[in-house]
Image 1 (cartoon, helix red, strand yellow):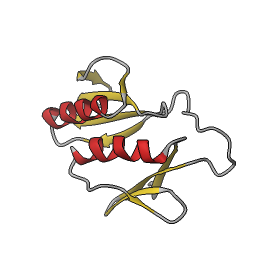
Image 2 (image 1 turned 120 degrees about the vertical axis):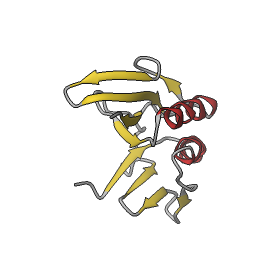
Image 3 (image 1 turned 30 degrees about the vertical axis):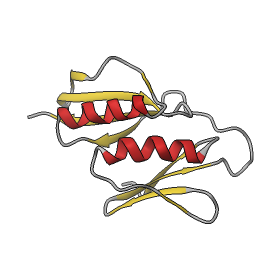
Image 4 (image 1 turned 60 degrees about the horizontal axis):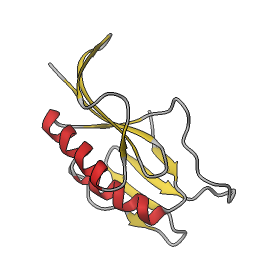
Length: 126
C-alpha cells in the first residue's frame, strides 16, 4: 500500500543519528544522505526518509499521526525504545508493553523523535 514515508526535520543530521540508532535495532543499515540533504532508508518493502520541509517553513509533527515500525519480538522493541531515548527521542504514550485491541495482543513501544514525530515499534503477539 505504501511506497514511502517522509517526515520533516529541522536538523536532518540530528534526525539521522536518532533514526540510525532506532532503525539499527530493527536490523536496518544507516541512512544515506542525498545531494539535496535528505536522508533515506531504503528496504525491499519501502522507503523511510527525512527532509527539511521544501517550503522553508519549520518542520512540525502531525497531531494524531503515528508511524509504526515492525519489531521481531518484545526484546527488540525494548532495544528500539532505549536506542531512541539515548539518541534524542522522548518517550510518549505508556511505557513499552503489551496492549490488547481489536486485532489481538501487541507489544508496543512509542517515542517522539527529535522533531516531535510520533513513532512506534510494534510486535504482533500470537
